[in-house]
Image 1 (cartoon, rainbow, N blue to C red):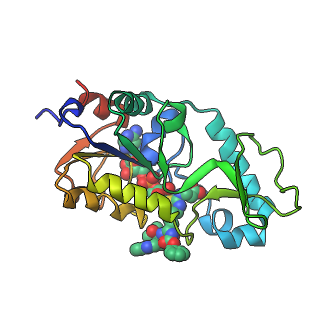
Image 2: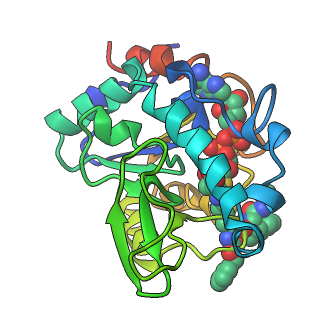
Length: 232
Ligand code: BV8
């Protein structure tokens, strides 16, 4: 059966996870060789760990900065950016912190879980982009440690991002979920807004996930290939 075709829709939302960047060489979180199977997030990616040992947390994030800086957007990222160029109302909601959607040319990407390429000083309440790999300075001018602007487990998501994501999903006519295992909340709950709004829903993944039943169409294969099959 031919999958739904992007050309037949006008208000499209792409909801992406680590599987979107797997073909760029970035490890996913779970499964074989996943980040969390190599590193315990309680030691490297949460506020407590950062307060306990900021140097250790920065060593981990510098490893990720170097790894991601060596990767480029894959044909899947380029396809999403191309759809957005043709249909400017297209919204990209990502759980990824790698910035590859933007590098592929996508704009107004909603980064639900923050970015590897932004840091903040919680002492001064400032936030700024920093694409150095490794990071040039781990401390702010005020002397406090800079913190990666990433939503770690236990951190609240930015309410403005949640509002934008919910509005986009509630009003879309096509939702395409790409490469997410659907196990982390509240992000995993968001696609339900599109189902409620009567959108056509597509899940692209190599395998079934705990939320596959929510989707009308389940395209099983690599992100770049399955996206291409929707743009025939
Ligand atoms: C919060 C940034 C409270 C970090 C991430 C309700 C029920 C149960 C638990 C909770 C709940 N609500 C909250 C919780 C706790 C927790 C949670 O969800 N725990 C889970 C594990 C049970 N949630 C939180 O802590 C959240 N915060 O709740 O705060 C609060 C509220 C108010 C005030 C104060 C506090 C914050 C969660 C965000 C954590 N940060 N990332 C970093 O990177 O360092 S989560 C991280 O994992 C990702 O961002 C993503 O969101 C999530 C899942 O990863 P995926 O992207 O899906 O990747 P994964 O590896 O799992 O899967 C990849 C998939 O791709 C696979 O299915 C694979 O088959 C597929 N694939 C692979 N290759 C390809 C492919 N598909 C296609 N093509 C390919 N080539």
